[in-house]
Length: 181
Image 1 (cartoon, rainbow, N blue to C red):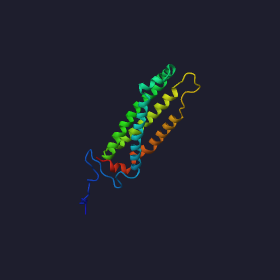
Image 2: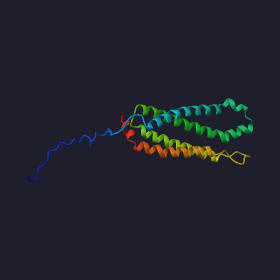
Image 3: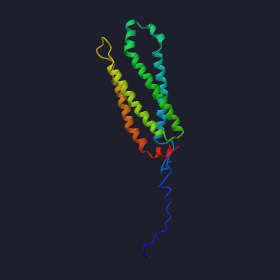
């Protein structure tokens, strides 16, 4: 009986995968579960960003500025114009990321989880930027500047969303099994 080698057939294909391919984990896949909530939030974000951009474009319309007095125009250019431009630019960036995410989602591309994490972080940065800009705005002759409570609440909601969904995209078996292309 000495040292004899055992002849056992072991399937090692599941242990080693080709570079660039993902081995499907046992479990669930598809666009169900929590991904339904992600789909609804992306479509709602798309609609809300389009509505928000259309409202900003109406406010920024030069034809409407004829109704303002000279003092109101000065206030507009010093206070409101930078806020509107920041909002418009950040909304365009967020809108582009949302559109890319929707395409990646329904094509089940591997880049989707990373792009969703980028969207959540971009939302936090945009909310913090809005909060800072509103907080630094001063209106001459007024006791207080703008109320920063809505911007603060938006920032807190964005951070909470990151705390919930970034770990989901990093750990979920459904996400790992669904976005493999």
